[in-house]
Figure 1 (cartoon, rainbow, N blue to C red):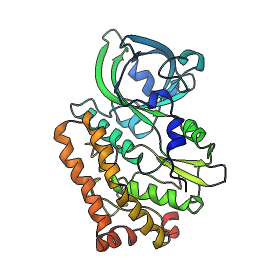
Figure 2 (cartoon, rainbow, N blue to C red):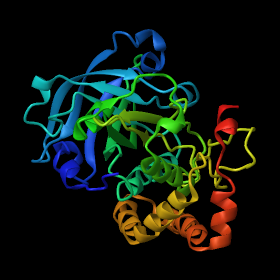
Figure 3 (cartoon, rainbow, N blue to C red):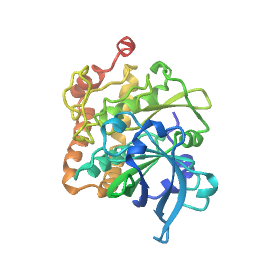
Figure 4 (tube, one colour):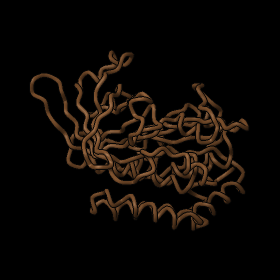
Length: 333
């Protein structure tokens, strides 16, 4: 597997080349966006943003609601954004036709903290695999335009690049089928992905059913998993997060390896690879955690350290990962 980053970094659009928090304003009816009746047409609005001169500028966009759990259970609905090439030419959004915007779930004091922790989770995957979604943290001013009494909210949010841009970086294409046998996924990329899901304490995913995992097919025919949506992960530890009753854990902060069993030599290779990348992971965390409430940082550091304790201890690694991997038969049940 090619773990070189130079070509992929070059192909980043301007929006994802910067780490500075981007200021954005949006106004729409929360009720209309949450409703699935408006999905086909979407809603035309102006997206206002602070340009490089720190002046407010705007572009016309089309927005729709997205997601299932968050859409039904959350106060803020995640958004799909569609923009025209001509409208974004010469702006920070140039090169993007579609974006996902992840908002906090609840309207609560700590909601943005959970959102930032999810953003950090995205960033932590970057030094581990070139096959990742680029993200940008934004400060979002939202106006609910329903009725006469408009209400404003100030939250943090995440912009996530469209999967077609990820595929374009690798001269690949996105797999559109509903189900794909995990045996068909490229071995090394898959185990790196599965280790990462264990790393952040995420069990809310399935590469087989494409649940919170997109599948990309490289030009040589290999299938690569692309992970996203980490709000149910122990690394985030959101107040609303739950685990499936079918699992052997009772809390999202408990780690459970959910990857498919592979040759032990491959597991040992990926184990060594993660340990070799530990300093890069800590560096990424230090850079991204500047956006987080300082009170949250020690807990995240302990969670990261606990993961590397497992990797560096032969017994723990055997008990928690090697002996917990899932057979193909168990995966299909």
